[in-house]
Length: 241
Image (cartoon, rainbow, N blue to C red):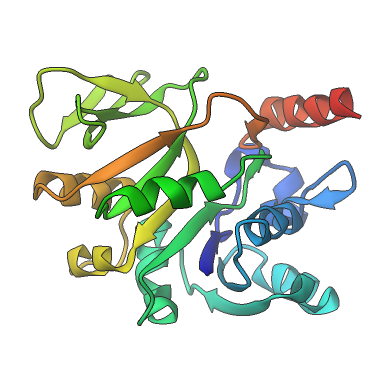
């Protein structure tokens, strides 16, 4: 299989760390977030990767070269300016032409999920995508209907709420930054260059196309988006030693 690792962001909330160290190269227990992402995906049978870079791009690319890409085939999609998650995928979509499905993986998450469960869920039906979710504290959540299909998104902090399809029963679930997608989603790319994957998913849902979820009820998961979350991730790994 193939996968895209999202690694272009500046990591504003992690400054001043990210002034000199790109977020993908932040280490937890001596292992960078980028290496951890690659190893997790390799366990699911992924050996062909593309990674988008922008902030301190040369440092990320040099790190991969020095480590022989950790034994996988690796392509680089360097962005001239940040394209957001959806725009980044659109720029790199040439890499997936001819394939049926692929993973997209946020580089700033620490988890030990078995991604083969996502593959099994994806194979059950003709989904355009399956999103990894887990019940945990989060202000931003995807909304799913009684059939487990995406129908909206909410942000508790801003009180923003977008409903792509009306439904009688709603289930809100926090996203984990991992998704298995059909290449058919490329048919739904907007004309613009910069957009988020959330925006894309809601547009796909609005058109009646199915995007579902797989819930990980157990397992380690952290994002390292700010110093407090980074410290929590490091403490979790220390407890597991």
